[in-house]
Length: 215
Image (cartoon, rainbow, N blue to C red; front, side, top):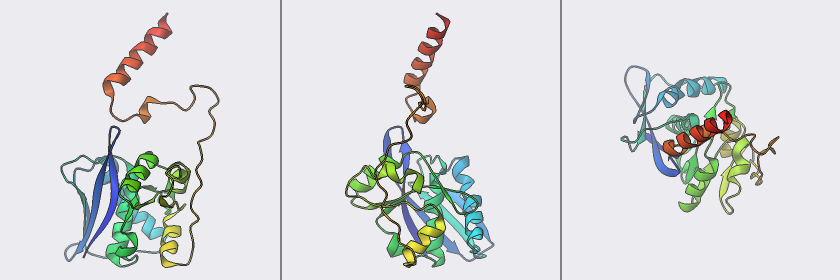
């Protein structure tokens, strides 16, 4: 069986649909992620394994292959943790594949199964809305995604809460739109590291700032 979970990759300001395919087959036990993953994505298998262990779930002794399609596009970031974990759970039969269809998922997993905030919730929400689907994201960024009106959003604080929601033992309330905490000054909280791509523009700002400090 091959499970499919939808997520996204960020290419500058563009959002690209990514199909996370998880297959479990007979063979020597292994866990491989393919499809041009960077180091953060490659390490996802260890976070997923630890998070499942924290929930009392062990990976089956099978050959597990995760393909991030399209495979010719580089994948960056820890937000692939959640869709990979959901694909593994669907392939194991813990969660039904049909319950996950239509959702775009993103989020970073902690070793205890908690979901950590990631960047890109609003662009991912807009992408999910355009595709007439829903979004699964960490609770910490649920308020950001909620600015997209009319979108079905699940924003759990942990992987366990999400599993319980799909199993009907817990109901996740939809998040309310909210802004981030107010900065202490006009420039607090602004960081060029948050901008993907635009290397020439960022370099120009750095040179201008350096020149200003020497005057």
